Structures are given as C-alpha cells and as structure tokens.
Length: 530
Image (tube, rainbow, N blue to C red; front, side, top):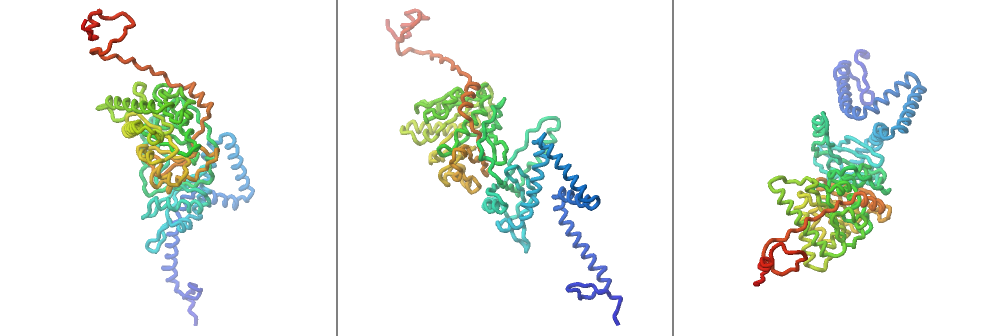
C-alpha cells in the first residue's frame, strides 16, 4: 500500500521522493538563502542603474494600470519638454539631459553588455583561485566626441597593461582610438567665498590619489578635423591658464606658463606658428601693460615673427652675433634678478617692476647645431643652458621651436618641462622629443595627416603626467596678428644713459662745450705736462 504521508518532490529528473520535513527545513531555507545572496549581489548593479530600473518599473506600472495610451502621452509630453528646452537653453539641456542620457545608453548597451568578454579577450582579466577577476566598470561619462570610462584594476595589474591593449580595446568597443590615463585629467577649481573651505575639503576627497583607477577615453569621432579659429584676446592674462586650443573631449586646453619652459617640435608646415601665435595672443594684455616682456629671435630671417614686431621688446633676425649677444644679455638679467631675490623668496612673482621675461626662439636648432662659427655656437649653447637650468624659477622663460629633433636638441629636451610634438616624419622621433615610451602611450605624431587642413594638431606631454594629450591649436590669421600688434604693442623701454666711470683719462677727446674745469686742471687730468 502506498504511503500518502510521504510527498514526492521531483528533484533531478522528477523522480526522487523526499519527506516533507526535508523540504520544509532544508530545501526551502537553502533556496531562500541562495535568493538572498543573489539579491545582495544584484544590489550594486541595481543601484548603479537605479534610474533605468525606476523608469522601467514606472513604465510597466503605467501600461498595466492605464494602458499604452497614457504611456504614449507621457512619452510625448517628455519629448516635447526636452525639445523646447533644447531650443531655448541648449547648453543646460546638453549638460543635464542629453549627455547623461547618452552616458546611460553607452554604459548599458555598449560597455556593460560586452565588458566581460572584451576584458577577457584583451588580456585585462586575470584568473585566481579558479575565479576570473574582471576589472570593475565604475562610470561612463560621454561628450559628443568621446566616452570616458572609469575602471578599477584587478590586483596585480598596472596601467601599462591597458596601454599595451589600447588598440584592441578601441576596436572591441567600436572605436578607433583608445587613450589610457592613470590619473584624473581635470584639476580642482579655485574656490572662493564663504563656503570655500567646505568645497576645498570636498575637492580634497574627490581628487585624492587613487592608484588603482584607470581612465579609458574612447574617441568615437575626431573633433579636431576642423580648423579652430583664434580665441578672443582676454581682458587680463592668467599666466597659469593660457588658452591655446581644444582637446579631444572639446575642452579648452590651457597652458600653465609660470615656472616652465616650452619646446615645440614639428615637421615643415606642421603648424608650429599656431602654437606660437596662440601663446602670444594669450599674453597680449600682459605685454601691453609691461607685466611680460617678450624677446624674439628668428634665425630664419624674420619670416615667422616679423608680422608682430611691435609685440616684442627685443627682436633679432638679421645676423647671428646680435642673437647670441641677446642670449647673453638675458643671462645677465637673470643673474641680476637672482642676486636681488637671494634671502627674500625662492619663486618669482611677475610685477611691473620685476616683469616676466619670455624668450621665443623660432628655430633653436640654428643656434645650437647649424652655426659654422664654433665660438658663437658654444656661446649660444652655454647661454641657453644657463637660461633653461636656472631661469624658470627666476621668471626668465624660453619658448623654443624646431623642425628637426637632432642630437643637439635632444640633449636640451629634458630641460623643457612642457613639450609639444606636432607632425613628425619618423616613429622614433616621437620618443626623442616627448620622452621614452610616449609613442606606446598614444602619441602617434608620425601618423598625423600632412594635409593643410590638419595643421596645428599635436601631442602635449607635461612633467606631472606621463600620458600625452592630443590637442589642436587655434589658428591666428595674418590680419589678426597685425591688429594685435597695433593694439597690444609692447611699451617702449628707455634704457638709462650710462654714467662714465671717474678716473684718469687715457686719451684726449674733443670737447663740444666749454670745460667744467679750468684749462690747466683739465690738462693735468689729461696727462699734459704743460
């Protein structure tokens, strides 16, 4: 006779009988425990996608409660509202609606959907203790041209792993370029006002050092294909943030000029003039006020810098000896300032009495390598070495440009904290200019297009950041240079007349006016025995 008190629970092919107490006290608690563990694991995913989950739940509830008509009405009203907002207040709509929605879409349907597969195939995932450790996707932030993906590396990895896999990662996520950064690309803002102390504390927490975080920037389209017009001349010059061009994420690239030297290297017609004149344009108000004194040396006969001759306090272009004399004179200016600063301060602050000296050399190779006169070449090289090694902290800066990264230029490379490489002819020139490993980190200067419409694109390397930054510098037209030279001309500096040293006269000189002393006393001083 069959026992009806023993239920038949179908485990494994529906044929295993089990008593009710086993089902009640073991199987059901085990299933509840597994469901709880699964829910706990899903909680971070649900929290990261809380907006999409909330919208999905709300849409299902509206459809179930009121039908699809109400759901369509809500969607139409929301679309019309966003359209009016885009029409009237486009920047705010882009910042608060369009870009966050694009970031949500890219994260959910591009990166999160294929993250595990891409990281495993590109050797970004490591296996430990029979478990595959995949880097954690933390955030996706989009612009119109790039996707900035923030991840946390698995233990045992370093950023070089992602530098080596950058090309594979780019094509895995349907992009052509992937740039890897081991630190934040932005810096904390200057805080002012009553709550500045609180905001500084928040920034200190937000911008703290987090070595395990890596930023992957995927370039969906090249935003630097179009020529960037020159920026307006600022009302006041900020020497810590000079606007020169645009980055790949369409953020304005600013250069901190204080306490740094700048080296610009690019092949012929690569756009070095865009860098030089954008820098001069940003300095124009300070040049007119006398806060910055711009000195120029143009060994190419004044072809590049002569359009803005009025902007330079000193300018040499014709022959080499005056150029070398200018370098040595600037060294004397630096030493005099060094003597005045001893025991008072270690860093120079530009003032009208103690201005910032900026020396711009259009072809630095002509002074350190191409001179036939060995004496002049040695003097020029020694003066440049003195300025590069001691001038940054004393307010005497050098902006050097060249088109040939030869050995003589490479020897001076490390004295330039800021280096800009435009289009170069050979792959090995990239590391010669920007430093060892720069091309492997993404500075593909040899692959930049030589078309006239693509001039002014280059890579920037700063001392505090090993990864190169791709930038297109603004193009300043000849008419804008002439207008700028006429409006922001450097003030005329009147040199004091040197006072003759008192002492014994060695030669008789013809006096044009009456003597200040009697003839007998004047003759005695001249050495006349009569």
